[in-house]
Length: 608
Image 1 (cartoon, one colour):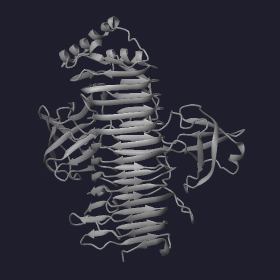
Image 2 (cartoon, helix red, strand yellow; image 1 turned 90 degrees about the vertical axis):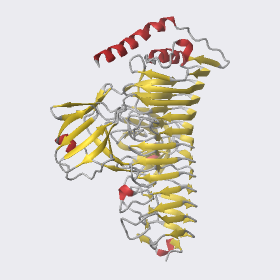
Image 3 (tube, one colour; image 1 turned 180 degrees about the vertical axis):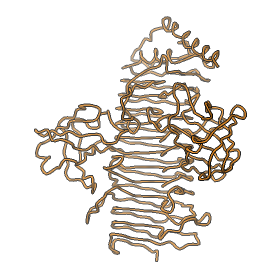
Image 4 (cartoon, rainbow, N blue to C red; image 1 turned 30 degrees about the vertical axis):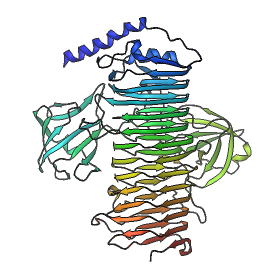
């Protein structure tokens, strides 16, 4: 092992002098093709390609009309010699004193009209690195490229045999471990697991459920042979079977798979993301994003189960049009797609029409969430009702946790401290189509945006929780906002919601309004039509505080015996203008609708 590490270090050092002999790029207004092979990038060499890529991309800063062409084959990148930048990433920045600098494989900043042509290159990252970052750019495309990690930050082991006092397991060849004094620990390139967040994959049922590694930590482990370990202890409370795979990670979020910020007209096409650490592809305050043919799944023949430490596609405070077309996610420890804004809370009135607002969630802070000229809504955190609207005269980031907003002083009349602020200028239209979402223990899609949403022609296969969740809250994750126009059509939902039984509704519209107001509804105009629901438990849709909910022309098929039989297939709480009509139930059970806090006249249904 020492010899291997020494050779890697020599490879990295040997590359550095090459930089002094690299040609300086000459830019003109005509399209420039930059062949990285001409700058010393050698596929399959095992050398550290980071210094070469850094040198080329630093010369591209602020430039336009560039096509960067990779050589094909495999290239390896280490943090040493890579591009480095401080990044504050929504939902992926832990609240501590550690630096927020990130090592980035490919960084584009301040550029226009740039293409990265991957030429089917396989990029293998060593250590915790961001695959690519696009910051303050426009008209950028990245295509025909795959990313993986030599040592993913997810450890995996398969149960060979299970008894109440012993477990024999095979540890995946990519999951580095050591055993000291009868205790096992997992480690990687520059990191070590300190907490053991565990999810169990059952390959027979193709389901993922929360598990626990605590009994393994408390017991004693011995190595039978490399990769084959025997755990001795008390495993009475565990529900495991031979073939089950334990997927284990440290839940500390200190990175993301890729990052797009303050950018416009970005296209990602034919990308394979075989493993992403921290969070997935995060787009933050960016506009017009087009994702096509992206596959977030373990590399073929790798034998791994997990492809993403948390979400796959995450959108925070974006606007314009988001289009996700012909994509696949398989093996994420959190949601395949999450689209939301961020509520900040008013904590001080500073006078002169100025207020201080604060980021509230410990993993989301440090970036500008408002800009001069933006329209905002004042939101009551208990009811989620807008109290007033305003336009910002100015907005500035005071520190990593607080912003100061300036607006017309009259707009602040009767607005109490503790009110939340939503940026309603940065809300996107969203289209998600022709895609497949599978092998996740959580939800399929979370979406909260005021603009039009279309979710069509997708397959949701055994998502552990709701296949689609429409939330909005100002007290937990602080993810805004209300939806006004959602169409969910021509999708197939199969075996979803098993982790949330007996309330594992396939579609859940559940805003976190802690106080219900008469004649106020958080969400509006949601159409669920022409879908196929393949279920065993008779739970289809749950809705709260929705005005205009239409569930029509859907097919519900029973796929097996129900494990839970709650009171109703549809639960409605404080809703208005609901139509559940002309659906086909191919089930042994009779569907029922349960209502709460609403008059009968607000429901139109042919279910008796």
